[in-house]
Figure 1 (spheres, rainbow, N blue to C red):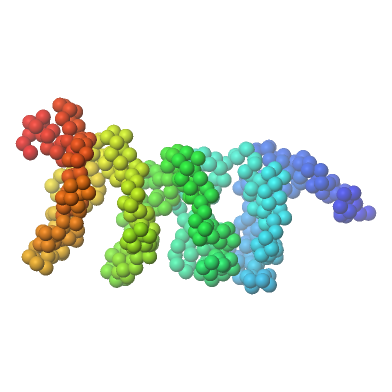
Figure 2: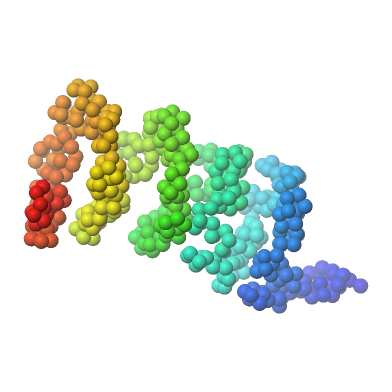
Length: 473
């Protein structure tokens, strides 16, 4: 005799199955995990959940021996061996291996979000995404990262190691998680169903199209509560907040140096390996990262897509344009706490702080001369090299750097392009103009700690300190 549910009239062969079903209507969850206290409506769901703690994967693929915790996961996996995609979307012709994936995909065309969170009423187009969201309401998270205390451990732990085991067979780009690789593959397949109406650019996912639209509107809805800087994307805001918090979750396993962003860690790792796999086909110069190679290629093409609206000066990169814009505004947001000197860029402030500390960690192996920064050491090393590739056409004098040749040419033309706005005196170099400006300001930020005598420039102070040290300059 069949057993019928009083609420929805669904029938069951066994009374125990009916009792389990009734808990869906009542919201009762009598089956509780003893390890993490998560409750379930059915005993079968609890059994499945316990496999997370035990690591048990009883469902094994006979073709590749890969194991799974759930039977339906094995079924999904088997379709990867056949590569058969029987379920096709009638709207965009995209095909799927599993019918449920097609059903979930169809919702992306309708905009429907039938799966609603009981706690905050947020709606989702997929039940799996809702389940993921529900975890944000659960306070207890048993799996915690030892590096930064973040939960969702297995996937998250890969970001600290910079490990990227999932590699694209087409372009060799690597990813820490398989779903990231799957998203990336859509670009190769040219499956970009979400198209921008303003510029016709296609995207693999609807949320990426939404982000892209902000580039047209200029809207920046995500605002930092500390400094009021606004961002177009929430992820960009989260990265920015690390500047205020000092959080650096990406740690190098070799030297324990930490970074705020993953790509910074990847860049850093190439220092240890010295690997430079990306080679320019035109000049054979090698680079550790693809994006650096792409930037370098612009030097050969001469392409400068980023143009200043105020003076029409063009640049190869957007960040260089943003730096240039500061020359028009005069803004210098990075201020030294010791002498109040302001800088346009953060790295310029960092370099400057080394001058106060007196620390010179970068030493020339040839003459033992020490420098406060790696770039200064690199510049110095060229003085040991006899090769001077940049030759003056007028007097055949050779220079190691192109900018030195440019400066030298001004001695022939007598051109002085840097003019003081106060007294109209001209200078051949910008640094000379900057020195001169101190005479108008009467500003002397560099003070001798021995006799309190002050100087407008750091090198004057250094020269003076030799007097106290009883050394000849």
